[in-house]
Length: 276
Image (cartoon, rainbow, N blue to C red; front, side):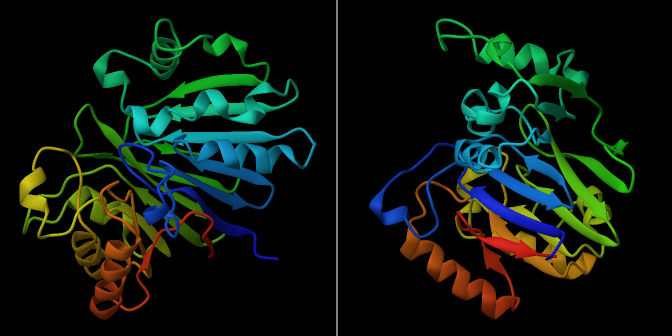
């Protein structure tokens, strides 16, 4: 059994889109699970985390879970109150964020503001699990457990965001969303983060043709993901954070184009599993 797997539970950006025309790729917002041995590493808590929580709870045993937030815009945290493991007293859930300290804020404060009247009926204190909050500065190296290393870098996104590289037993997974590129100027910090990685999940909200209409929105394109992978010798590119306006037909066409441009490139779908 492979001890390093990546499962996609939510692949959309901005807002859930549960439409018939989006069934193939899915309509839930960002949530990616990485299993390394007995450890659960979760990247972002969009609406996809609800189904992930149900899957984790099926085991019945107490769990230790780490959730790493790219940032705290609504689409990346809206599933947090509905994550089942938060409500099992024996569970330990650690929440991590790297973009808030520079804004004189912290993750606990943000979630308390989100889960507060008149926007939400109950506060985070309803969680019965041992939920702890861990803020850091993007650029730091985290070592959540012996044998695991998580490198981080700041991303170009309104209000800040963090990119992650998880390293385990000589393999590496990179989660790089939400970030906006500058045309013809590769992001040096991202290149350093993803150099030689086995897999990079990358913000592919738009195409290069669409991008000029969305400058300053904080997102990128699958073509830029291809360019970064070529420069940094990344083995596998997974296009992610699909725009809600991109239906199955549109994404299938983009996936075909990406396969021609860089064979092996994947477009993330809910339920997709990759073994590293």
